[in-house]
Length: 56
Image (cartoon, rainbow, N blue to C red; front, side, top):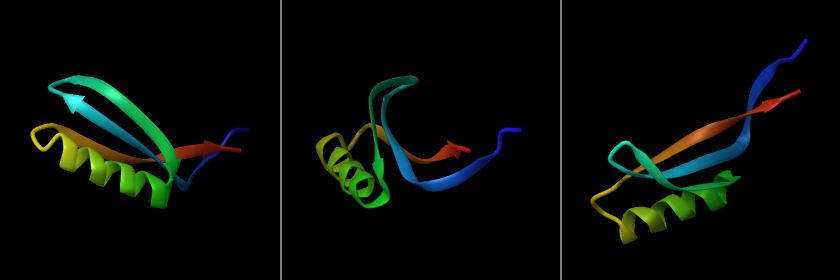
């Protein structure tokens, strides 16, 4: 049996319309800093910040 749980890992994606142009994964603190940097660098693009499901 496989179960999923939310862990402290986050996935940051930078979007150009419907296309992902970059993806970053890391711990919550680092991912938050990366997302903030992407929002400053590319203010017109969407940045998504999603939890990563960990399989056990």
